[in-house]
View (tube, rainbow, N blue to C red):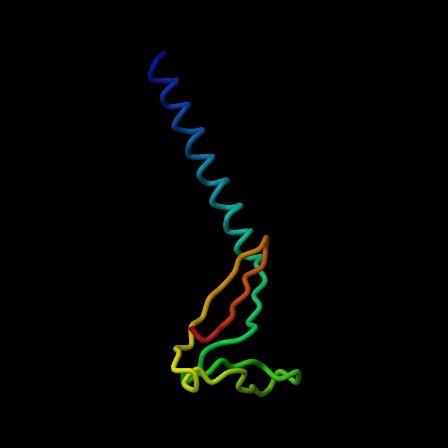
Length: 85
């Protein structure tokens, strides 16, 4: 009797792990990514409106700083950005 409760508990735990894993994968698959800016040769770069070329937003060397990138997470969106630090 005690063994059947243990086996039942293990079965429920296994099903829970699979369900949580599947929902985590579904969430990850629905994420949206925004790349506002990025670092390139110690410069902060940004896409032009045409989406085919990029432009320098800030030259970190001028202020003796280092281009640093970061990201923020909000609901189903990841936003990447860069700045001089």
